[in-house]
Length: 127
Image 1 (cartoon, rainbow, N blue to C red):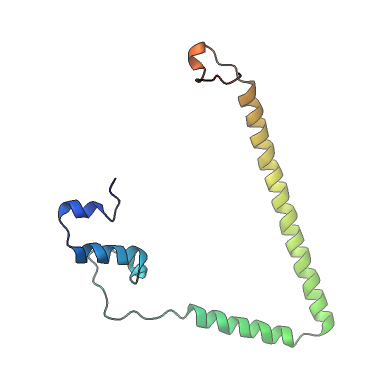
Image 2 (image 1 turned 180 degrees about the horizontal axis):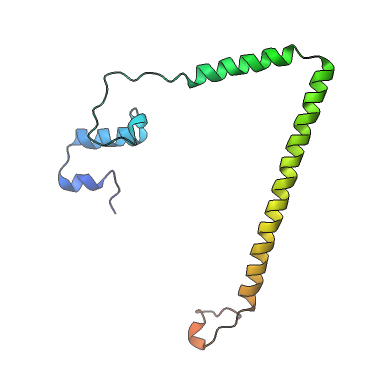
């Protein structure tokens, strides 16, 4: 079965067109994956400053932590622990509600009786 990448082969695309299509999706041109297939390929791609900014942010956080007193560090750790604990407890409560919904539906499925033999599966639902 053809994919979005292989279907154009049947229309007679060249190897170069096929390779560039794959490169846009998976390779060197992946940053162009959402652009039209006929969008021109630039001679040069500008690098992202994401990692540089993340590094600068991390250095700022490290400097701030380094400037904290032991008491401030203890308070910050306690607050972070409480935040994480509260988030975790909320997640557990949400998952328990979700599990109860699934268990209630499963009980209804298991209690369901097919109205006729035609509604039974090959092995039947209850046997």
